[in-house]
Structure formats: C-alpha cells, structure tokens
Length: 246
Image (cartoon, rainbow, N blue to C red; front, side):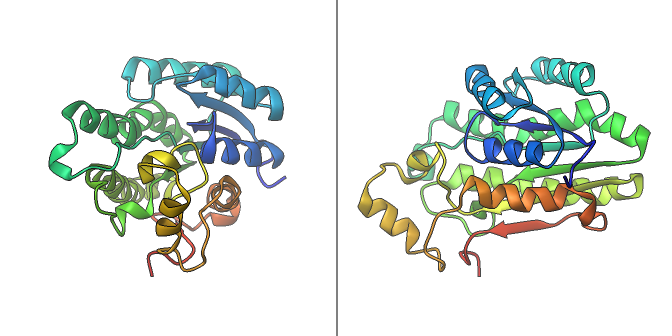
C-alpha cells in the first residue's frame, strides 16, 4: 500500500504501459483516473482492475481542461500525474514522413505535457506538493534510424522533464521520466514497421538483456518514482532498457 490515500491520473491507460502503471497504482492503494482516447479500452481496464475511466484526446486543450475538472470532481486533489499517452509514425526516411503524421506525433507526445501541466500544476503549486512522471523513451537518448521525428519528440520530453523539475522543485513538485526500450505493447508493430520474427530479432539484438520491456517493468519503476520513497528524487530520466543505452 505504498500509494495509500494518494490520487493519480494516468493517460494512455487503456492499454500497454499506461494500463500496467494504473493497475499497479490501484494495487498499491491509489485512487486512479484512467484516461485514454479510447474510452472503451479505459472502461475495460477500470472494470477489470478498478479506478474511474475517462475518454480524452490529450492533444486537445479543451478536453484536457474537462479531464482536470472530472478528476477534481471524482478524486479531489491530485497527487500524481503520469503523462504516458504517446504515438509514433511508421518507420520511414525522415524526409518522407507526412506532415500530418509529424503534427500528430508532436501534439500527442509533446503538447499534451504542456496541456496537462497548464491544467494541473497550479493546484499542485497551491498545495506545495505533487509528483509528475513523463513516459519518454530510449529513442530520445539513443535514436533509431527511420523513426526520426518520434525520436525527436521523446528527446523533447526528456528536456521538458528536466526543465520542469528544476523550476518546480522549490515549490514541492517532483518531475521525473522513464525511458523504456521497445516494449510488448500495441505500439510495438508500428515501431518495427512489421511484426515478424526477423524484425523482432533485429530489435532484440540491440538490447543486451535480450528482451523487450513490459508494462510490469514500467509499473515497478513508476511506483517508486511517484511514491514518497523517492521524495528527494527529481529530474531523473531513468532508462528501463535492459542495457540498450549503455
């Protein structure tokens, strides 16, 4: 019960890393708003594991404001925010990625962090406490070819995490990030371009420990960074990568 009496918002909680993080937080005593653009998926997770589902496109300011209002209504003060929602473009030469794909990647992966901060940080400032966790990627540390603009969006998130951390630390708000290696989530086929044994073997060959990350791996690290055990930890961008970035 390491999050007993805590409240949390987890975006992208309908599947993958977000679902794993939300489940672990619920198991550890938190009350959680599971946010996803696919409200049906969020409702399925909430029905199976607890929490409250909410449909939201995290790249839309009006929808984020409505999400924050719903969170305040059903949870009260928010202790933890996990910015997990993210997308990628399909592997392609950097000059061949379409403008619509580029805009959507940066809207979901980057603008959403600004929008949730705008909606939720003022209340955290007023209380003098809070924990924000951004789910970035090893792609922002050690980029893979043909995923250029996705790499760049995750590099942005790493820098945003550190900038937020240094500004908000005197106000009692901690901001950290996780950098997972490619994981067993619904996004994996898009990262690879095609989900074949050969392509999986190529990706796994770049990970010294020889396996993809899992929602449980991310949930364990998220639990620590969002708990009071990490009360002096801020600005950390922790690799969950089996050694890929060494």
